[in-house]
Image (cartoon, rainbow, N blue to C red):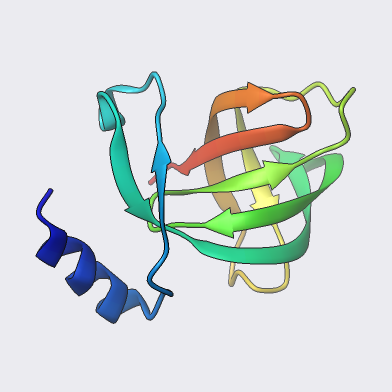
Length: 109
């Protein structure tokens, strides 16, 4: 993706000019890419089909997903919902990677 596309995305979403390299094994992001992310520290709850699973903290948000911190021993399904006051509705997500207590998820439509 061209640098100007990132600048357009930044302006539209009013996100700070910070880039981090991310990788995942999903077809949506074949290989390494740069993606704009908004750093944050938002308390949230994880649910599945309306049933509570765990508390979590959202560490950053991008147009396509989030990085979330959960207690290390938390067992989670591959698809779940993230609930917090900052979102108008629960956000359906899929876990694409996990490193200990940190999860990378992307938004499901």
